[in-house]
Image (cartoon, rainbow, N blue to C red; front, top):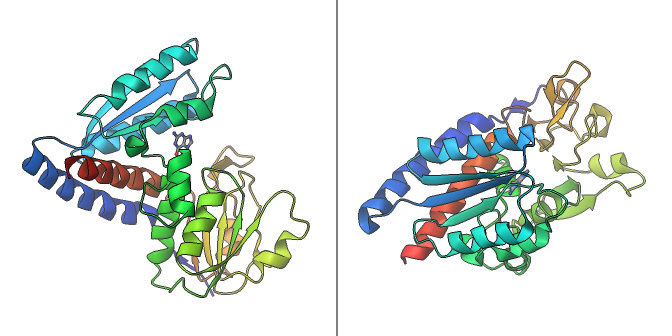
Length: 284
Ligand code: GUN
């Protein structure tokens, strides 16, 4: 059996097209496009690519965007002052500070400085609490995108056994909560889990978010399972790969998201969705 490939690029294009239609309608009603501000501090090359892609996605889909780039010497106070100014800026509905920030800046302080209604990353304590409590709110874009990929298979999530590998605040934990909200039975595994395979072999859905390639191999997968790969790694040849041994696992799984072309494009699409939602809430 060969798995169906879950095409994140195609799905993200659908989501982005829908955002563009709705953003245009909102702009017509309220005279203002949804606006996203992206702040990059320092010169990490991978972060620079990510923020460029986010800003380009805004521009390609009718959203207003601002990119602010600062040297790594920017002080925490200066960054907080920029966030305060953007909080007060009516043309900006979402604020994203690309992580990681330089070591002399406290990321928690930065996240909490963003007005909660503009927290389009969904990283703030309030957004996390809303998700935890099952209240409406802005959901972190990567796990939100993973949910859309899982839903795109048409397989009902309710009653399924989902295993999330990884427990980060940005992916693993919110992913587990979103699956729980969709009535899956959820297990969270991590670097301290003694026998990972014993868990994944029982899973109907696996979301791998460890940042380690070959975290999930074919012998660890239940035939027919849905496999979502959040990893962005490089193999020995320098080629982009995920956390899943894609070539072997696709022969066992029912559905599998590739890297690249799976979760990555969906993360950007869901950031646009969140910015649209934040703009809608501001206009209401
Ligand atoms: N760094 C890597 N992924 C992300 C993300 O989704 N949001 C922010 N702010 N920083 C990141």
